[in-house]
Length: 111
Length: 114
Image (cartoon, each protein chain N blue to C red):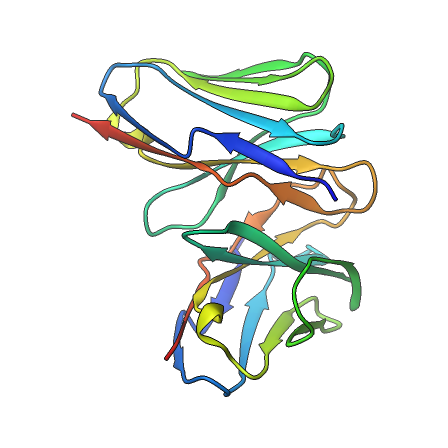
């Protein structure tokens, strides 16, 4: 079945440094979604990418969807302590309504 | 609009018991999905219900079951609990239009099996 891998699992950064998490699917995706889960909280939807090569920005966050629609990345510029949490990608397959979540990248920011 | 609600928020059970968790989706959402979250395994998809029918199922044993009511509220049941079932159980609701749906998660039920 469809598998979605996410790297790295953990990332410690100094406040102000950049951060990137990568998401790779074993199959071509119809769309990719990104979620953020704060410590003790639940996943919250950030964004969805649908088109091959799509790039979307939300303030300091930049999301990319690969040309082959099998990979994606989330880049945060100049991290802040409010960015702390686990970032999940979730891939939508081409059959069924199921989203497959990556394992998440836990971001820790040192002030 | 009220968000997704889950009850109870915390639960402690012993091995062999069964448990029922409840999820009320956002008003107007017809799809409810259930996920198990553990530190080692991340977010694992259990099943999705749409219009009272199970539409998708993850790779979990038959001890895990669910149902959806006509008002879209959903319940999840785990029978013969095992220690490994200790986890945060999240439900997520969506409009149910298809695979591009955004998932809106509830706060989860923290299940501890002793």
